[in-house]
Length: 557
Ligand SMILES: Cc1cc2nc3c(=O)[nH]c(=O)nc-3n(C[C@H](O)[C@H](O)[C@H](O)COP(=O)(O)OP(=O)(O)OC[C@H]3O[C@@H](n4cnc5c(N)ncnc54)[C@H](O)[C@@H]3O)c2cc1C
Image 1 (cartoon, rainbow, N blue to C red):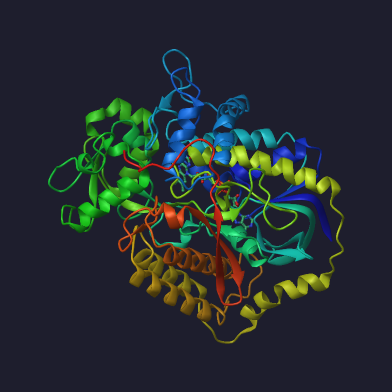
Image 2 (cartoon, rainbow, N blue to C red; image 1 turned 45 degrees about the vertical axis):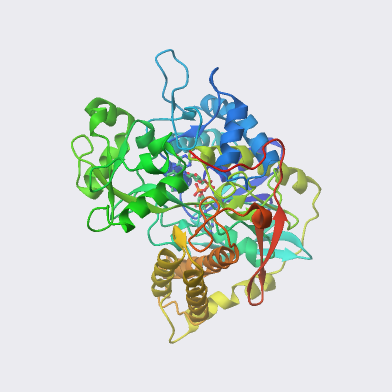
């Protein structure tokens, strides 16, 4: 049987940074990734990474902006740690070889981003994620570790409350294997594909979050789903906040720059929840364009600036929307973009399950609280990926070895085998599409009790139908029918936690906007939602928010 000290699941920025830290700490490391590492969603990040590095900016302002952006639900001790690590982290990435844009004086160029009191988003044109991912991959390549590429984690193995290993599936051969591990770092990234309209890649299905939930890990603040204000109309492809940072304007069908009504001080650069709600309100009140969208105008910035600072946006707009941003406005509306919730961890990535650590978008520390600021999550992957790697290595140094057997593997995969042995049953891809429609319709930007109840009912119905799915394709090599089934099963679990948490939270805070409870209710709801998997679905409990220096205030932009 394969055995490793530290198994990192995920090779995006969080997973790679965790692996590097664990190797640096002297442990033997294996990395599992269902994609080639450079295809991870981190590589799609456009706008940039936050760090208060200039003389005029300060770490305290970054902390304050993040606390305020979180609508006071972020843990302030974690946010303080995070913002202090920002500068050293960006410098380290530069030393690893990331080529960031420069200002005329040679310092790191910074662009304004929503909700930030100062331009502090450092960038590599509009391909920041890819630039970081490539540099980190090259750095990691100088170390020794085992890479399991195109292997899917399917579940975690836990005995007596302690992680003992993982079960994974080799896409190229169709074989399942049990891999023993002293410590596991879950860095499987986003799960935006529970929605239909999303900026997330097709691979963002939350497998690791669902696997952790299945073995008793607490999921935190899952009801907080970020919708990005500007995604291309039909494809949902992201148009980075950097486009507004560079001076892009939002206009409704009457030609009005409507953000003046919603954020009279900062207009288009209010935080994402505020801008997304403004766009949806304009559309619902009849001031959008037919088909439900508004315009993002860049034309006034000039060809030179658009084509040099927003190269990728130009390509996306031309190829996927048939419009040229140099001469035409872009048709945009909001789309699901980021999950504030995830596997609950402390600052060092530890979860409530011994030996299980988590980092990146799969985790919830929590620094984003109920609303993440753009540019903070690339930073999060690196800061907390490193912490999780260090902590997992320290734990693995003293952890005992387990003794799993092939019977453990047989038991773990018996339900999956049953899908392929059935002679009738439902197609998992049908359930995937239905789930996405339910989430888009009932658990979107604006929420109500009636919608959420309907959402819970429908997701539970889909879960029941999932118990009867059938995998028709019997082939072993790249069986996407089987991968699809595994992913849909994971996403249905997470969709249920999102909607149940949203139904329970009878207030509006950050990205969670209840029409029937339109205000923030600190007296009852200044607390994190914790979800444990129970026999009949998620069991909710609540945990306090950590405060250091910032008292809650009304959040205006
Ligand atoms: C279009 C887009 C643009 C963005 N732009 C920005 C930005 O400008 N600034 C910013 O701060 N943030 C941005 N974000 C958010 C940020 O990019 C992500 O939160 C972050 O990159 C996630 O990194 P990660 O390492 O946690 O996950 P990922 O990079 O998604 O990596 C996940 C890894 O897990 C692996 N994996 C998943 N499931 C399995 C499984 N079952 N078995 C094995 N491996 C598995 C995948 O193969 C992958 O390697 C953007 C997000 C999107 C979608």
